[in-house]
Length: 112
Length: 114
Image (cartoon, rainbow over all chains, first blue to last red; front, side, top):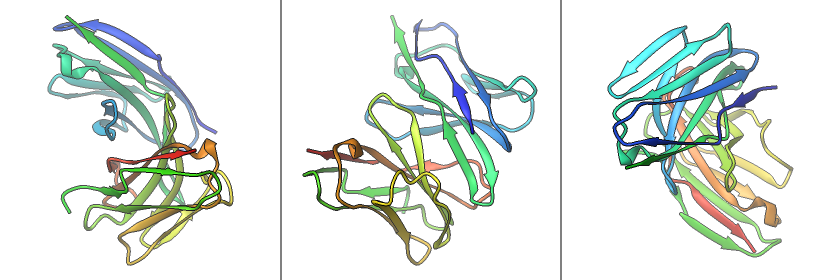
């Protein structure tokens, strides 16, 4: 089966940098996704890593180490609107397609 | 359409009743997924469609749950004889093809079973 772990909640200050970690144990790994979910809304795509290394996209960066089963999402220049749940999801390509298994999410609170 | 749409947005039903949830994926997306999110929990995979076929039904929690997709587009998730533990937000997502990474989510249907 799959096991994905991420912190339940984090608090950070506006303008600062925060790193949200995710560790996973899975078979048939086909990539790792980060999604953002504001309360009462659907998840929206942030990033996708399939190879080791850092992917940067504006204020958001995501890192993957496949050998360690580890990823992190880095948010820079935090804004109040970044307060949301951040979901780590592991993709497994099976005969049934691209199946995502989600962690329980990290609730980030950005404070003044 | 511009995005994934789901209906109804909210559904309140009595225990034992059947409910039907609808998902309309992004036009041209061949892959469609159903997830369930209970309060404070992560997303739980339910079922996946490629075209009209469902090669992966492994996530359906019981035989009270079924889903179908017709015309390679709209999908319906049916829950028979609903139980209180079925209360959750049911999310639908679609992607361009089976191998495509990014899944686009609909706004979800909040189901409350009294």
